[in-house]
Length: 406
Figure 1: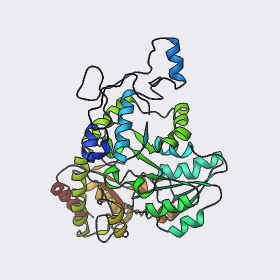
Figure 2: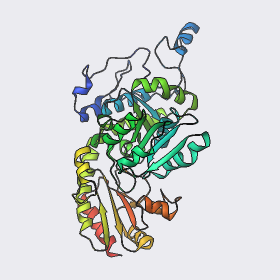
Figure 3: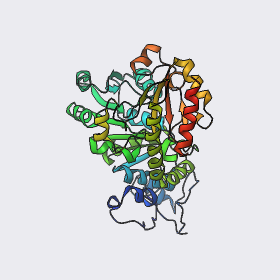
């Protein structure tokens, strides 16, 4: 990770991992400028200057630590990266312009023509596009498997398999995959496991403790949490950054804006409070939905009737902030339900302070055939609810009204 030319002392213990996550989210990675600001400084600069040509040469050769260009590293971005690494328990982190930039870079930086990827078939639509449409253009093949079937993961392995990829809980069906078991299979095959941990957040699930090699996030979601800007991050060992990721990011340029990195830093300060409140409300809402007429199915990892409830208890620290449910009447019923909502807004985002509802079949997964959506468990009546910070009683009242419109 890049460091400032003359770093100011940190104001946290020498081993910040001894602090609770909530404290790391407020203080982790903060470097003060000589002005001693309370809030982290925002460095809106493209480049940096040097005392002399010799110093410039040494900086570019890596002999003199410091920043050279904000596409490669920036003081504000470096603070965000360090705070994310401290939160996740990773050796290193690199921020990107969006969550999909993080997914794409985490995969492409370590793959070459002739390599093979094994991935769970239940994925965000853009992730499936990278695996099914983009990587094959460059000679990289992908096998999609039922993520819950460990035998399928084993059977898909080839001598050329380099990467396993999954998200858990999955988008949008909240299906859980046994990360520790899949990591064991990947490592036995000599492959790395990349986990998209967006739905669980860094607070509710710790993929590195379960054996993951690389963890990716769209920080657009819970980390910002207020609908302001885009961002992503890749977390891994320092060796992976040195051997694969750093040069790829430097030469291809999917860098985050320093302003967006600063927004993410401020979002991290309240992440624990927001996730705790959202999760508590999501649990109540899932129970309320399960008791409503015209609601066929409710999926929430914190409920005992979730298909992987035992795995959820073992792998996660809570049920999360999203609830998925199926209404009667297919697409027409789902649209009628969504249009009847007054407080909850229709959007394709999640993890926001505002509660948001999405119809995946016509938005995030609309490009798939009906057969492919059915294979992923996405029916026309399925809705994904991202629970926000409103009072849960008001949200439940809104949902009850919408159910009455069916």
